[in-house]
Image 1: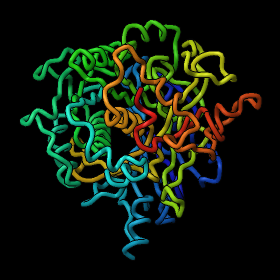
Image 2: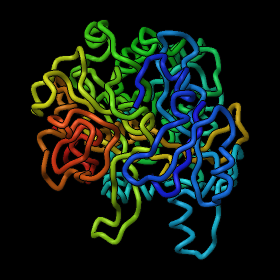
Image 3: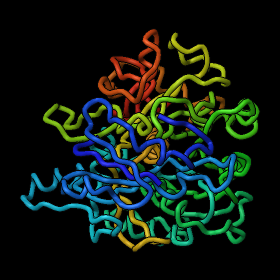
Length: 446
């Protein structure tokens, strides 16, 4: 497990290489002025403890695959320090607070629904849209407390109830069964709580379908995606990934080629480098930003999320997937990651309620596992896609307009000088943040 520190806000890719990421990251240097990073296998470093405001975090257990060939989740849980949300609250109230390492908080320590809706121009849409739409969350293994934890989150923030009883929430295995569920796993349960809460935060009126794969293999996760579509979901969020392989184009056809369905996939958390299924030409690949309040008209500012040479939002050029017709960047002959982005930096992370395998309470999470369900929920607010459309194309029709917040600063690694945009933000399209972040829903409808 990796533990990272960042004093303010805020690349190895591999379907199974994360097993060794902690060792590789110990000597990592932090890019773009984010501060220093320390990687360890357990608790936050001594250096981190001497600076109370420093934010520390660790990869969730599902970020380390159980078996060779398994995919990994893309999430981190904050373990100490003062998050951006807490700093902003302290500035408003005069009361300081910090996250206690490895302990749940009694109240949220990360951004909540009103923050995310405001940051992405979604307040009105979140209030009036989404009724009747279903967002599917695809993850591996079972979270026995998923419904109860979701209820805690939604009740605290005053969101409409979303329960099995009222028909809003449903949990199934990859075959669609509500009773034959996978083995429970506390690491993936953290991921599921994050995904469910982000879908709720952005689209409070949407129904939510949680499809739990039997394991984190591509075959089982892919079957879970297919089941989500079979059960009627028009919006499917996937917060996992791994290294590319020559089998990916066949996976495209088997699992991700669903016209009329918006499928989002997190771009990865190991900096510059392509991951699959984010590289699939049929999905919307979602990069990550650091999100902070500002004095601008928007009231928020974003930059590329990057902590070290082995940690930050993913991006890059696929080795196997062909470029979709709507993607026109010239530095990559094949599919380029990402398409769009949203908050992912753990130091500017989001609030999540979780109780399975951890002390019940509030945690702050980051990683592109947060940004993928956020974007899936934005698609849901925008309404059902055209039946023959691949909604990954929609943001490209809005490129350069006010429907997207162009992210122009930050980098997630080192890439060729002839195609620097693949790892460095700039005006217009770039790899780490794609076309930018949502400003309302106009960029996510056909």
